[in-house]
Image 1: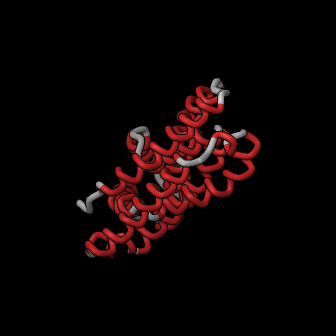
Image 2: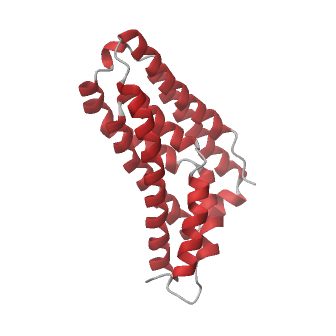
Image 3: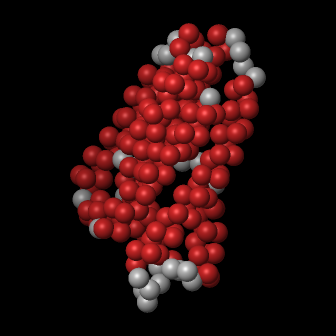
Length: 208
């Protein structure tokens, strides 16, 4: 095993507590679920996982030091991520009920959802700084670095996926009970509101 069992269990417990608190990415996944159904919500998790993998790699490679030292770099990434989320939310808010059939939403939304969640996860500077501060506490300096990083990354993504699947299942179950175009319009607006809320939450991030 690339990491000691004690460190791994401590990391898994800490990660589970942190992941259970919904953040901008979770709100975005739920927004996709509300707007396009649980299948698109599940697919969008792939983008989150790829984004987390890239964020962890960047933090290990030292990009986090740039974000921590440069207020300008942090602000650029933060406002790009926040603006993109708000733009997606407004776009979703304006979608008409005729565009919300499950088949059309699944066909149109799956790849878009992956791309969007990947971009938002990667553009969240707090995520990169978080991994830079969080991961080293569970790295054994006497063992090779990258096997430990890979093991912790897989663990983090597995816990995140299980947690968010629970959120998606609950939201998707509620959505399936809704059929009328008028109600679907408001459901779509609820999803857009979640994305806008995620953007506003991202805009409040601070380096410290």
